Length: 347
Image (cartoon, rainbow, N blue to C red; front, side):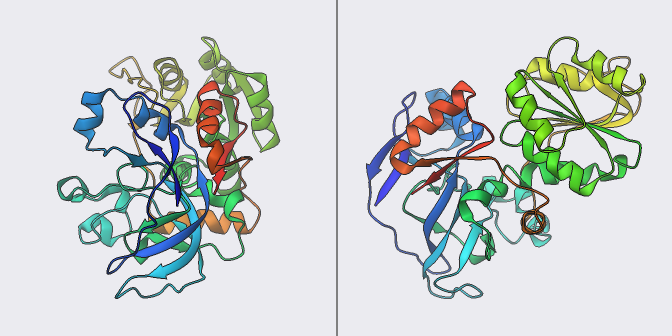
């Protein structure tokens, strides 16, 4: 079968021919119908050899931690799924036994690191292939009649912002303000989620008018260029009070500085992006009682809720399609910032 793999440190991903896997006991083989392209993949491929090795990533690595497919074959002992089922893959795999996993929060599994459990595409073979192995049926969520290409990105680009926003919902009452920094793959979904589940006024920040136009299309009440004056503009829009919740989907030094500066008293500052920035907080540098959080992905039950939002039409993903053979081009477009919404590879 064909697979898009990262094969050499510092190289571009390439399409290779590898053997089609067979499911072992407890495993499920999917015929992949869609795979999402994410900045996390770029982050992994940007690591030095020393950093890559220390993180425990293998070479070659089949990319793709956002996946959807049709169940093609099931291993011994698998229950609750059948050949022909349309499913989405819940990506943050855990041990299934610890306290967090028992609550469906495998994104915070306490045993994963010690047991060498890695998510697909971020250690385990991922979804950018014609077929993929899912280690357990509990990591599959029914898609039903949802279009896999239009919705595969919700397994990360929807789940991650949903988890972040859901945690801050007590702050997002009527009259509140939420700020979304970065309106790309995750950010443009976050705006829709905020409109669907909260009463907050949504202010969107980005560095180009094109991306701000997308933010307005999907529901942002206000759009602001993300520059040195952005925090002051947010305070102007909020009557000097600041934002009750700020979600930074970039995570670079300048955007984190904006997030901290724009936070109101008792606000949540949530850094989702992996842009390498650091929050500088201390007495006098951030509003009183403001909290800084670094969430990771979301729970399985939250993925079910995100897909339910998609079914009711409250959340959708702007998608650009690529074939598997065009996989390297998709990452080039992502790096260049020319993807509108989310790039999706269709094997």
